[in-house]
Image 1: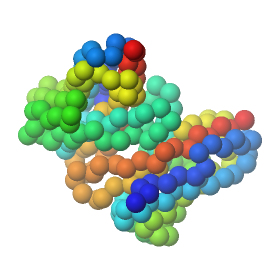
Image 2 (image 1 turned 30 degrees about the vertical axis):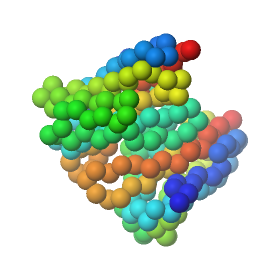
Image 3 (image 1 turned 90 degrees about the horizontal axis):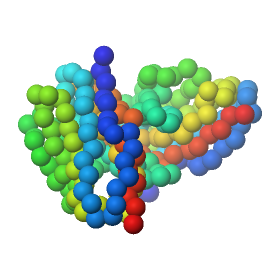
Image 4 (image 1 turned 180 degrees about the vertical axis):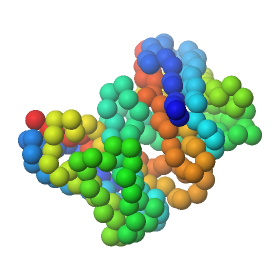
Length: 113
Length: 111
């Protein structure tokens, strides 16, 4: 099992450009989510999905879109990148049970100039 | 407001020494609390989960405690190793499945 796979690991964008961060998991997890991690702050939830075809907003959704067409994939789209979106992004998945251990990808470091 | 506060922010210890990391929370209603270890450049990995009825749980050299009355948890690392250098994140789950993350404690173990 590869677990949770994120691509790319690093990306540099110019302000206004768009891009998609890819996330795939092979554990048949129903729950998938995207977080951003900034220095000195806890992980913040951007968007999440409880199953294929179902997505919802998290704590900081503005400027990001998601879709969940399959159980395995949960891409995150930046519509028009801004310097404030410079961050490290993590995709995570879990079984939808009350213990809810999150399995994280390796992260994608995004810099917006 | 649901919050998770971790202390200290950072810590440097000598290899072989013990250390204790603190997590105080105001999350209610409480479901469970997890400690994650995040190595530099990697994603967080779960170390242990604490539920309401558990006071202490060990995972090798890591021992987590929970005092649900005072809403405090600690992570004790025994006989530290260089590989323990990482960020340790406390995450509290609220009933209804909302997660509240602490900002983490950065531990550096020196030889």
